[in-house]
Length: 171
Image (cartoon, rainbow, N blue to C red; front, side, top):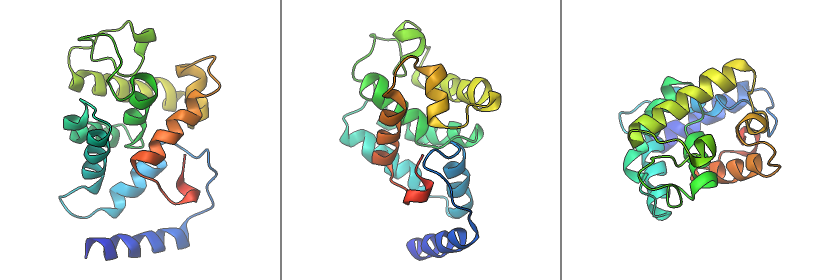
């Protein structure tokens, strides 16, 4: 039943949607999913936890928190976890006890906990990146990971591995 509702909402969304480029706004897919999920069980959390478990990530138990922070900051729910994939192979390769799976300050920053790190990274992406005009993964990359020419595509790769969206909604 949930799948049928999701498909119907998706079809209605497609009928009313404008064409979106592959480098669309980061917040768009999060807003889309927020409006299309009507039950208490959020498929995004299940998807993310399953993917992180498959990657043997210590972050799999924090899937709910990634989703919560993404929603509170109007971010794509896959963005921050995808950054951990690029920067630390999903928290498997990072400075010990730093909770820094994001390459924050070139890996030299120490967060207090996983919740603290997810909160700070999500809030900073909203306040210092998106709110200042970096609205696409490419634009974020110029600030987050200069001079890398591969960071944006690598983040997009993991976003689509976590949960592929139809082509017109892919970041």
